[in-house]
Amino acid sequence: MEKMNLNKHISGQFNAELEDIRNRVLAMGGLVERQLEQSLDALTSLDAELAQQVIDGDHRVNGMEVSIDEECTRIIAKRQPAASDLRMIIAISKTIADLERIGDACVRIAKAALEKRVNTQQPLLVSIESMGRHATRMLHSTLDALARMDAEQAIELHKEDAKLDKEYESIIRQLMTYMMEDPRSIPGVLDVLWAARAVERVGDRCKNICEYVIYYVKGKDVRHTTYEDMEKDL
Image 1 (tube, rainbow, N blue to C red):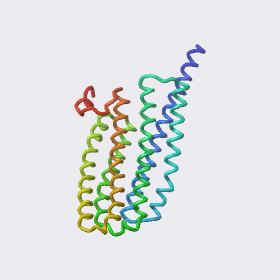
Image 2 (image 1 turned 120 degrees about the vertical axis):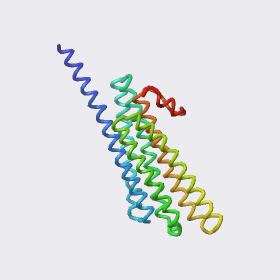
Image 3 (image 1 turned 45 degrees about the horizontal axis):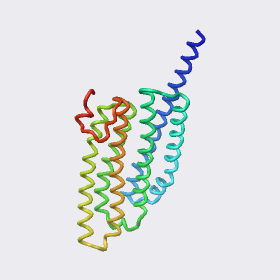
Image 4 (image 1 turned 45 degrees about the vertical axis):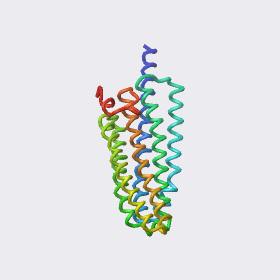
């Protein structure tokens, strides 16, 4: 009886540890989502104070990645998880790396807002704002799929990245036209270009997180596979 109670206690503690890192990665996701919203607001309104706030806040994102990663390593070493428990820890460990990189993208967007040359490119910032809102919605939905470990939603969001890529390509064509028509605009246009690239990378990172959700739910690595293969066995 004592042995059974001990096993139950250990199992319960393990479950609590898994729930804790799950909650922490979602909290990190919420912070990154706010960073993205604020960086885009800073860029479109050219708010230097808000941009600096995003830049200064990046250390919190980095700190959360390190602490969660350390906890994942500790759990693996101490609990030696298997099957779905191990998949969850691996998915979380990979997710926080992509969230940290989204945080880096937010910093790049915020830094563009601090460049005075961007002031002359207001028409281009409108296109960035539209693309940015799309990326923000995608990140929000990706975090929702992660919270619920919803593989079906993850697959649909995985497809959404192609739409964001098309918006990025459209902006690139627009930027090229501006530079060809007025070579003097090149420095400012390049600042906008780097911001647009950062937004596009947010979509790529969301796509990666969706793959981790599918991996956890299905136990299958779906990187470099077709959507038909992803949707099997759902």
